[in-house]
Amino acid sequence: MATQQQRKAKARARHEAYVARQRSKTDKRRRRRVIGAAVAGVALVMAGGWFLWWTTSDDAAVQADFTYDQAGNTLPAGAPAELVLDTDQGPITIALDTKRAPNNSNSLAFLAGQGYFDNTACHRLTTDALYVLQCGDRAGTGTPGYTTADENLPQADQTGLATYPRGSVAMAEPSGGEAGSQFFLVYKDTQLPPDYTIVGQMTQGIDVVQKVAAGGVSPDSPNPTDGPPAKPIAITAARVQQETPTS
Image (cartoon, rainbow, N blue to C red; front, side):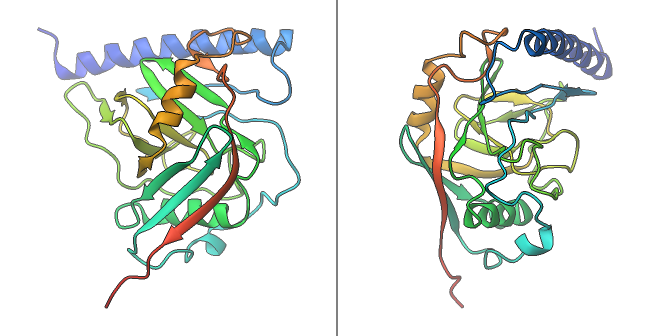
């Protein structure tokens, strides 16, 4: 019987092989330039898991070189707060976990207040093994000028993976502790390495995400299960609703 370490090693090898294939397809896509300037990206992988990280085209209309010092005190400590995403497919409301993920909650709230997410596309949909819609990249770099540390990481099981439940919202990042502005909306239970901060839960609008997911990935994508959504969705405006903690 295989040991836990052997099972993890096999899972890691399968994941790395999968993403290596995706990277090759992405390189071919870039050469063919079959995807327009609106959405372009590359998926990478780290040992033991997937990178949930794509970058899109530049947009100089909004500053993209903030510091976390500017973001860090956006929300009252521990106070309930909701991030509301108005999209052209319907509103999505996210209850931010300000107690267990205060830094990342503050970051999203700050960026929303700066208009960072306004008029941006949710640029990536995955429909096989990973069931997420990814949003939040405006500057074309994947970061707003700073990164935030990991918080509120889920517990791994014996395979080394963790379940990100339907409705959860987590921070995308290229490696541990480097979350920026990108986040992903989980529309069906998904297993991933326990490396992505769970920053909140969708309390409204999961039907919006599911509607986009039901449309599948754009036929222009070389990967039929990972790429721009065939049914485009854009965040038209983002705002925070918050309550002042009672004494």
